[in-house]
Image (cartoon, rainbow, N blue to C red; front, side, top):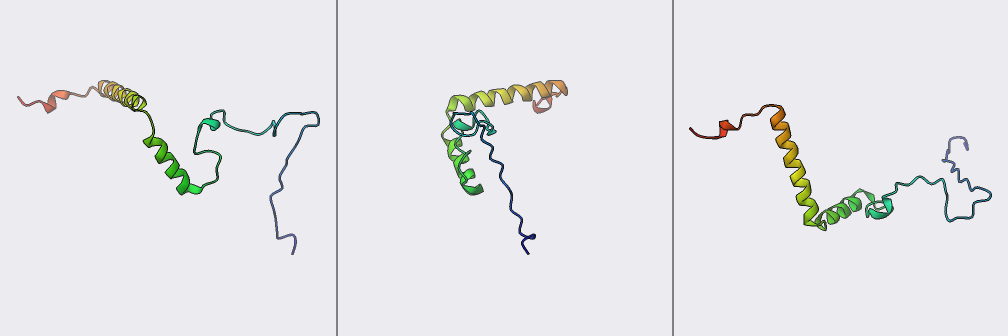
Length: 91
């Protein structure tokens, strides 16, 4: 019955003449060291709570910049579809 138990085999290659720390072939995003939700295995609830706390701690300048960009994109979209604003004005 040993053939029914299958485990994943890990391939942990270490180069012969590499003198650095860790594995040089580890794939990691270059911005992972700045993110608080990456790295710890907290589960989905812990990750969600961490993302909410980061959202609460953001600075107001970034939020206002995002709102301005969204507003500009909405106005560009309304211009492209030739939206008539005069339907909201009483005559």
